[in-house]
Image 1: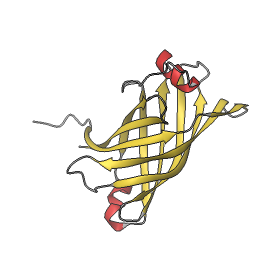
Image 2: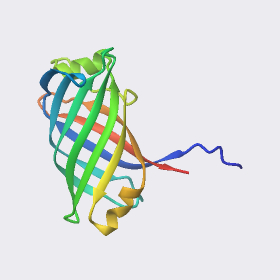
Image 3: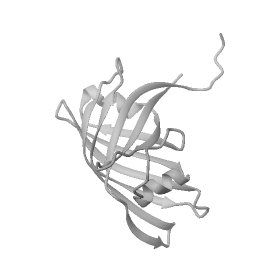
Image 4: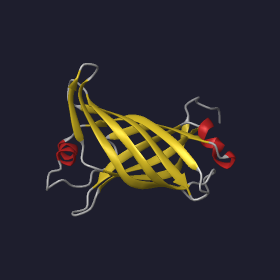
Length: 168
């Protein structure tokens, strides 16, 4: 069968980011409304059989969240650091967007009736950097992910990403 030229996706990692409530910076000259969300921890783990295998803890990070003028989407700009079980550091960044739905607005507002959301409203592009030779393939591949919020009463809000490697 001839190739269509379109890339495919191969499931690679599950990332779970524990987030603190957003801090509003306000309207800034470069982009309008800006909020910052800091990370309270999290993890990234490989799907079975994925190479390079990763089992890492998120040490810290933050997300600069900018609201589109239409207020129908927010733009994500993340910088973070994690430590793998090999005791090596992995810098990671991602950019993406979230479609603002009523369910997402409840999460952003910290509403007591906020609930977990489904995948399908948030998509991101991930980049990884590390000095560990076993993990260097992370730097030379393209990764995309779909995200959702996990809400459990009395617990820290979690953003879960299913990250896939782009392949031929």
